[in-house]
Length: 68
Image (cartoon, rainbow, N blue to C red; front, side, top):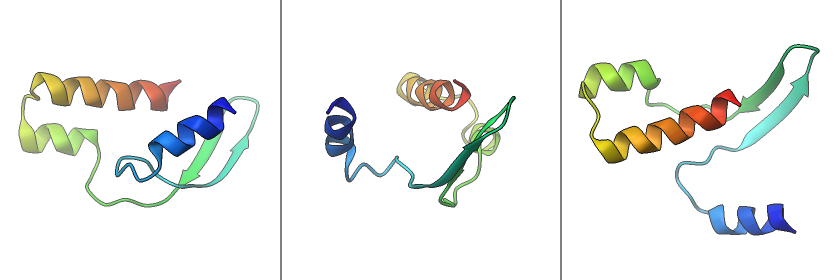
């Protein structure tokens, strides 16, 4: 029920990607997601230079969720 509620709250969020597949080996968990243009974090830093505080907080939340 909790997962369903989270998904309902997040529906329509422009920052969420659709997962297409997932599998796991002994050392890795691999997630296949839809392709989204816009570049990676390194390119963002090159374009913007130093991030303001709200952007840095948002970026750290994304990075933390992808490295868990």
